[in-house]
Image 1 (tube, rainbow, N blue to C red):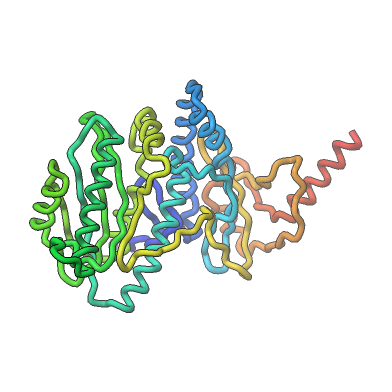
Image 2: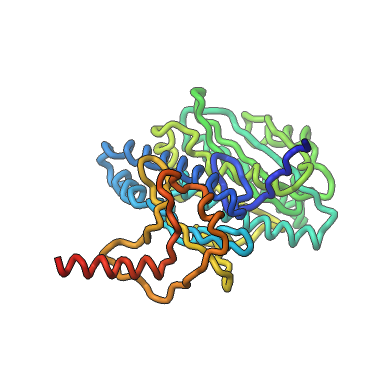
Length: 369
C-alpha cells in the first residue's frame, strides 16, 4: 500500500506548535480536539490566577473565564470546507493558548498571501530559516531587552548599508530583501533563553559563519546562529517560524504568568523589506464563504472537552436574531459520522431557525406553567 498522501497545509488552525489542513470537513474532529487541549490549558491558568489578588491577575482571569466556552462552526458541505463562524475570545494570547492559536494562524495566513505575491514578482528570491540566540539569564526582562536591542542593531546595519550611509558596516543580512520574525522564550531550568526565528528572502544564501561572527560582535555574549535554506514546500518554513507564537503554554504556569506580565505590550512579531506593511486581521474568526449553503455546528466546552450540542451559543435572556438561513443536509450518513457526535445519543444537527422556534415554544411553556 502506498504512503498516505500528506494533508495539505492550511492556515485555519495552529495548535501545539503544528499546522494541519483543517478546512476539510473530515478533519473537524481533530481541530476541535486541539482547541479543547488549548482551552484546557487556559482553564489551568485561570485556576492558577485564582489566588492572585493583583488587579492584573483579576482582569486576566475575567477574560479567561469567558473565553472559548463555545464554538460555532459552519460547514459548507458542497465544497467540504469548515469555518469558525462565532466564538468568544479574550485575546490574551500570552496566557490563552486558544487565542494564541487563532492569532498565529491569522498572522501566518497574511504573510503567506504576501509571499505568494513576492514569488510572482521576484522568482529569484529563496526563503532561508535564520535563528539567532542570546545567552541564558535569570532576569527575563533584561535578557529580552538584550535580544531586542541586538536585533535592532543588526537591522540598523542592514538599513544603513543598503541606503548608502557613509562608513556603514556590511552585514550578511544585506542579502535579505525581506524578512519576518518571531521571538520565543524558553526556561528549562537553566534561566530564561530568548531567541529569534526569522524567514529571510535572498537571491543568494547568507553565510552562517559571517552572521555568527557579526552576532558575536553585536551581542558580546552570543555567537550561536543557524541559517539554512528552506527546501520543499516554503509554507512549511513559514509554519516553523509562526508556530513559536503559540508556545508560551510550554512554560510552567508560574513562568507563563511571569513572562506575560513582562512582555505585555511588547512586539514579538516583526518584519522588514518586502514583508513590511502586512496587515493582520483583528478578528480571530474565519472568513465566511458567502452564498454557499452550510450546516451550523455548535460545540460547548463540557467536562474537559468540546462536545457537539446543537445548542445556540447565545444566552437564554438574549433575543435571537432573525433571518437565519435554513439549510438542508444533503447526506444524512455524513451527519451520523460527524466527528464530535456522541455515539450513544444520535443527534441530527438543527438549523438556527429550528432552534429559534423551539426556544420560543419553551418560553411560552414557562409563561403558562
